[in-house]
Amino acid sequence: MENPRLETLRRLLADNPANTFARYGLAMEHVRSGDLNGAVQEFEAVLVTDPKYSAAYYHGGQALEKLGELDRARDLYRRGIAATRDPHALSELQAALDILGD
Image 1 (cartoon, rainbow, N blue to C red):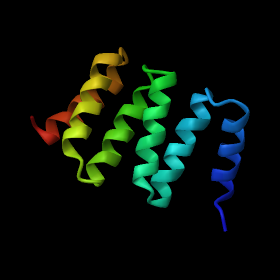
Image 2 (image 1 turned 60 degrees about the vertical axis):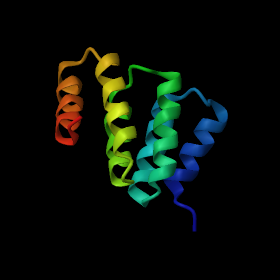
Image 3 (image 1 turned 30 degrees about the horizontal axis):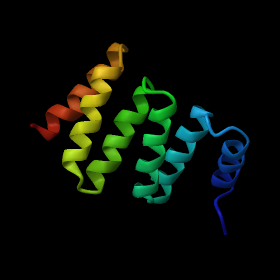
Image 4 (image 1 turned 90 degrees about the vertical axis):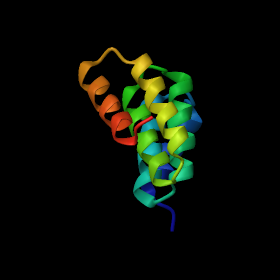
């Protein structure tokens, strides 16, 4: 049986593909269900629509780390650091990047 939240979010996106809130929600549902590749795809889609959506950089990077895609995670964190002006988000992204090292 399909996850009802996934169904709802997909319907919202069918009506408005640029809905970053719904797209981010869909990405997080993919994380919760263990579909990390699907999550990364949706986080990247969020960033196409809204390149300043800092949480998508952070959680996308976390999903990439879990997939063992450390270079891609570093790249996503760096992109987020360059895009965000929020001090809290900047600190989280920098900490995540520091943990991975260069």
